[in-house]
Amino acid sequence: MASVAPAESRFRPYSLVLAALVAAEATGAFEAAMLTSAVPHLIADFHVRTTDIGWVFTGFMLMVAAAAAIGGKLGDLFGRKKVLIIVLLLSILGSVVSVAVGTFGAIIAGRTIQGVSGAVLPLIMGISREAVAPRRVPVTMAVVAGTVSIAGALGYFASGLLIQYVNWHAIFIAAAALAALAAALCQFSLNPSPRTHVPGEKVDIVGGFLFVPALAAILYGATSAQTAGWTDAVVLCCLAVGAVIGAFWVWWELRVTKPLLNLRLLAKPKYALTMGIVAFLSFGAIGGMQLVQPILFQSPTSAPVGLGLTPSVFGTIGLGIAAIGFLCAPVSGAVAGRVGAKRSMLIGMAFLSVVLPCFFFLRDSLPLMLFVLVLNVIGTTFALTSIPNLLAEVIPTDNMGEGMGFAVVIRSLFQAISVSVFALTMSSAVAPGTQLPTVRAYGLTITVGSVGVIIGLLLVFLVRGSRRPVEVTTGAAVGPAMAQD
Image (tube, helix red, strand yellow):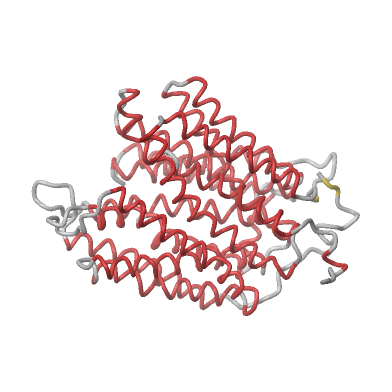
């Protein structure tokens, strides 16, 4: 019988812990993608405009970004398991509000409440470092981070079936059931988390109140620019207000002894470089590519750029591609564990630097473009799953929640900017009588994305390699000086 090392005997069974973490992350990813297929039905049922439907997604995204940073820090302070379960219960509440009230306004409110699931990823990355043996941490982080792609694809696919054979209410019911399952698994599979907050110690409430409106204004401005343009008065006003409040927030956080979001982490070169990589990866390969791929694959073959697939066929292909990406996640984690997360990130960014130009040069061949999609998901998986492992090499366990939360904020912000910029470049020249981009406009868009990825690749070379996660001296998960939630 295999013996269990004494240092690992304090951990719960690994399969249970991994199942809980994957279920929690799957909840957030499912909620992010679940209403995409329902847009036409919501417009018809509630007699609203397309611009009104945008609030269903905008409210969700704004809450995701705010919850990621603040929720991650609250988990560091008060116990990640406790905060994670509260977040999952709030996700259930969002679904209940949407279904029980049944109005369009209630759906917007419910989706905004669901956006607290943005805190899930930072929380479970922190839990990964305290709930599993150190030798399993890199693969665990990679698998959990890789859940995003497969769960998002399943959310899109499942919601399409539910809206076709049942109604939009069923989508929210499915989301609530998934969140309830995740909460139950987390409750019974995870040990209580340590908390660093000392009773009586002041919490930086002002920092939280300043951060949320600053981020909301900037994100709303970047999102609105997709339709209104970057010179629109409302867009410029939002960006200016966000910048002013953001500048005051930075000043406040730097003068507080124990800030809600520790900007001093950016003084660490490896952390700052990782945030730069996240920004350019999100801009070049993730955000705007959500516009590029449907236009390329679903536009008619008679268009300047188009391969003529139906949405259902492309959705099925996307599900298979996402599954391949998920299978690559543990490989990325194993590479990070053996030779460091920098090598894993290099593999991902190198793949993407080669793959993105292929979206232009191979655009007329469906078989070749399907192969490009496979290479693209491999590169994206390696890059995304390397982020938490890079952070683990520079951030103590006590700060993992806020460190990962800030990464999610950066990703959300630059994805929004990317979508706006890509929309602008693709609409810079359209085919006569259509809204579809010309070859020149499509090529310009791919060039912009490729430049972003190449800058990110160059930043990876500047990162100093390391294979040992940074730990705290108190023994984060088991230190007797740390309270449990």
